[in-house]
Length: 74
Image 1: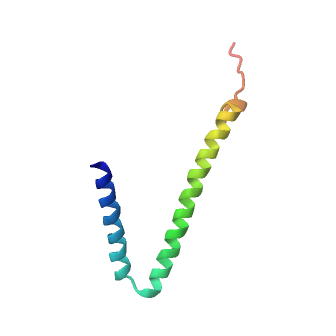
Image 2: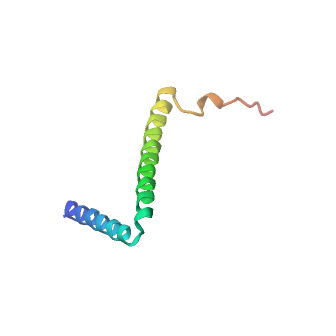
């Protein structure tokens, strides 16, 4: 049932996008498509950076570990 719901929601969003694109003038549609591609690329880059960053933190024992200083309180 969950898979069916997800498939229906994807289809609904696809139809919604098509409806909005029909409202826009033809010369604007191209711009919207370019913006959409750029947003997808930015999202994927952010996800990749987060994954790589976490792996590097695990490999180095934590990103802030080298910045810790001992403070003597007397």
